[in-house]
Image 1 (cartoon, rainbow, N blue to C red):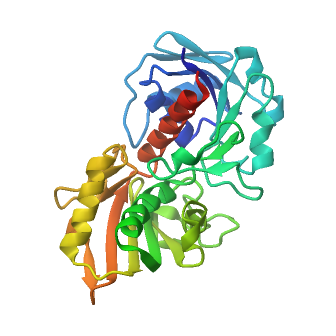
Image 2: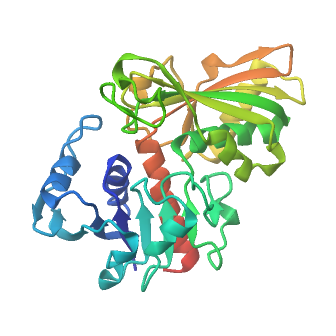
Image 3: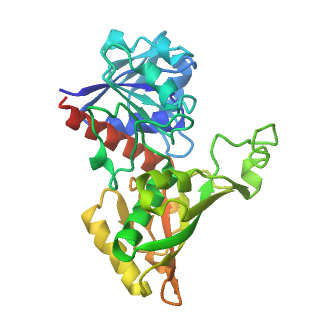
Amino acid sequence: MPMRVGINGFGRIGRQVFKIGLRNPNIDFVALNDITEPKVLAHLLKYDSIFGRFEAEISHKESAIIVNGKEIRVFSQKDPSSIPWDELGVDLVIEASGLFTSRSDAAKHMRGSVKKVVITAPSKGESADYTVVMGVNEEGIDVGKHHVISNSSCTTNAFAIMVKVLHERFKIRRGVMTTIHAYTNDQRILDAPHSDLRRARAAAISMIPTSTGAAKTIELIFPELKGRLSAIAMRVPTYDVSIVDFAAELEKKVSVEEVNAAFEEEAKRMPRYLGIAEDPIVSVDLIGDEHSVVFDPSLTQVVDGNMVKVFGWYDNEWGYSARVVDLVDYLREKMGI
């Protein structure tokens, strides 16, 4: 029996999760909540400026969108505690609005039939019950006590895989990560007010240094590295696909060949999450890629034996959304639905 799923927030991530999840027979999307009217939601689902037209029959009615003949109810509530998920027997809610990322806010969805909430962002303020990166620490989920789960961020999903490989193989002493990141809708198309004065500037015409929570979140996943990693983001004028640039000091002396071999071996163990770039690619080549990260061996550098610099591409929308779907399906299996 499929898990009945609702999505709160049908924006960039919510729509990509929906598209990918439709391919999974174990997931049944039965409801959406968004303050935008169904006509607009249906149009934005059908036409996407980055990923192209969604090949499905899509229409709408007053309180629903219809996809391939299946009606998905659309609610329009601003307060999560007012969304009547229970009317449709929703088992799990994907919190994709970007607004309710604390544990207490996301937990407002948990009424009636709703048993779990997955936040499509790092949990801010009061932390979620568990922060997960698929392929790294999902086995630590206890469905008996972890009810509000953060899927961390797109950058953390990419970065954590790279940290896992280097730390398990060679032990990381310390490191600095820069994500060279496509612009997102948290930035401004033209100069306009924003709490981050750099994000207030026009996204498509500047390189914009800004913060990333990836270093802080990585400490939840690798607590032994607490205080030994830092990170920054450089937003650039591209609309999708980003790259992690990670420089680390290792405990062991290594060669470029040894580092690349470690990633290539791990990619065989977890091919769903870690890919290997076989050619000299650029960012546009990875649009629509479903890996958490695609390691680029041609860019690996080693200085003085134990200073390593590695790079990993990731589709910050599609790849991340694929992990949300994987997490939902993993929870379904653990819950016995």
